Image (cartoon, rainbow, N blue to C red; front, side, top):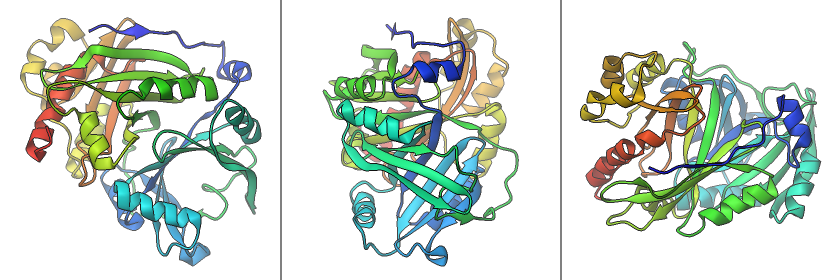
Amino acid sequence: MTETTHAAPMATSDEGARQADPFPVKGMDAVVFAVGNAKQAAHFYSTAFGMKLVAYSGPENGSRETASYVLESGAARFVFTSVIKPSTEWGRFLTEHVAAHGDGVVDLAIEVPDARAAYEYAVSQGAKGLAEPHETSDEHGTVVLAAIATYGKTRHTLVERSGYSGPYLPGYVPAQPIVEPGKRNFQAIDHCVGNVELGRMNEWVGFYNKVMGFTNMKEFVGDDIATEYSALMSKVVADGTLKVKFPINEPAIAKKKSQIDEYLEFYGGAGVQHIALATNDIVATVRAMRAAGVQFLETPDSYYDTLGEWAGETRVPVETLRELKILVDRDEDGYLLQIFTKPVQDRPTVFFEMIERHGSMGFGKGNFKALFEAIEREQEKRGNL
């Protein structure tokens, strides 16, 4: 495999990097899902992922059109929204989105220090504005929001919340957990991966370069990500502090249908493929989530027979990695442990990654072949390879 790496600009501090950045960001604010039944989705992510319900918006507190549940695990925040009765353009959009794409991500919301400045810069650089900067307030303070379009029907809401102390946004009220959460399974969103159509990866990488001032972290091109049957190409863009990382994938010509082709077919176009969640203890996380019913991809035992020869020693014994089917990758900066769920809905679209980093800021290049072969086995079961 050949990997091209571009150094992202690093400052002596996150604040210094933000000040030098034409589009400074503070981190991921929320991943917002449009779903058919938000109440049931909130229950699943509470019980299976161990997240904690913290806020709610619905008919009981004035939202007649939608119901939304806000779940958190550390700094990771998911919002699940379903339509009760569409009456506005937004409600109709969400209804049509679920009908066309199934449950999926509609918004990768980004926290910024100045939503007005971020929006103005993005639009001046060619971004399509979806919502101009506006204030929304309640007894907890004021939030400034704006939104721009990205690939497919996905958007980036720009959230300025330094003047707000409420549970999520104005219009939401605090909510009690659906189930009492145990030990936290993950503490942050590591990266969010988008799948785009053949030939459009460079276009969207250029979008993030120009519109947000993001730089290219890594590239995986040509035969880098390929098996006997399928292939894809991927580039990773990130802000200057590496708090927000967006890999962008496109399919590559191969003998059979790749996982990207399958996603694009069943999702009905470009969209968010998977969300990587950072954990400090991937062994405990996988054990807990598997016990709660989450299904993970299976890695053949042969992967682990020679693992120690090239991956070196990790904090988790090889036999435990073999038992739990956890993957390892090592680069010049350290190593990482990772594992991927199967799709979490009936359509073979959105899935999740659990990742534990020890120095490495990579994305598991050494695991691509094993991972893709595991995905191909699932595709074959579904009749989609």
